[in-house]
Length: 132
Image (cartoon, rainbow, N blue to C red; front, top):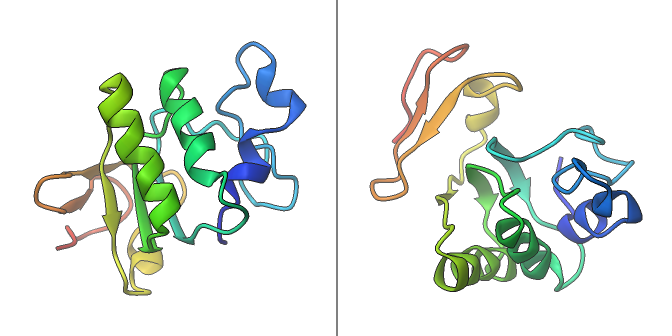
């Protein structure tokens, strides 16, 4: 399901202690799940131009995901990841993986490692293969 970062991370509930990284878009399957230190796998980012800003705020608060694997990477979201890395030194890998087979190989709860330099995606539990 596409992610709306603006809807997910700019709600009143996100200012509560321990809830900054909670996904607060009630229409999404990850509702109330925390994204801190997790690898997010999703097809695209939807919503407004505030997506990159919402991501920068997560990075500033040390509540950002460990990595993002996106089928169609949105330039505004990726810009947020780059800005957070430059401004705060808290970067993380953002990988564009255009094939649908990602959803056959990675499932919620799998342990996934992402190499931001090579783009390699390793599935440690659940899936059987590393992805190029």
